Figure 1 (cartoon, rainbow, N blue to C red):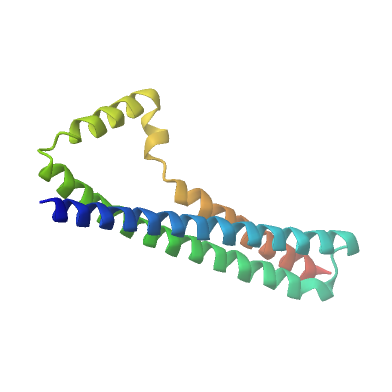
Figure 2 (figure 1 turned 90 degrees about the vertical axis):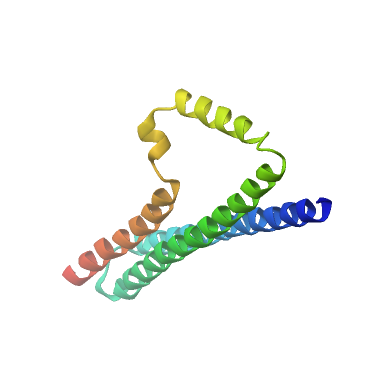
Length: 149
């Protein structure tokens, strides 16, 4: 029995670690994209919007789209590892006569009572994706402005 619980615990830890890894990757790439986009916008603002800056606008569109897709993919991988880790956790709880299930459910119940259901239901990954789509929309706006010059 100890070998089985050790295996389950190890696999649980592996999947939670991998889930965290995907979240860190998402944050790192997002930070990089924000810095690059800020630099591009500062460069355009310093020299003024001109027709020859359309390439920078397209670049913003591309990195914004890439960021949104990358963020969505990282969320998908994160969710995979969370779901698998949850399966290992449930099996561990079953082996321990479900004595830990009540603790988690009590914590979840308290959490839901402290926050409105609309906030609890709001998925954080939408904010990550929206941030990248905002960068993309800045690129679209800049492209339109440059083509009108």
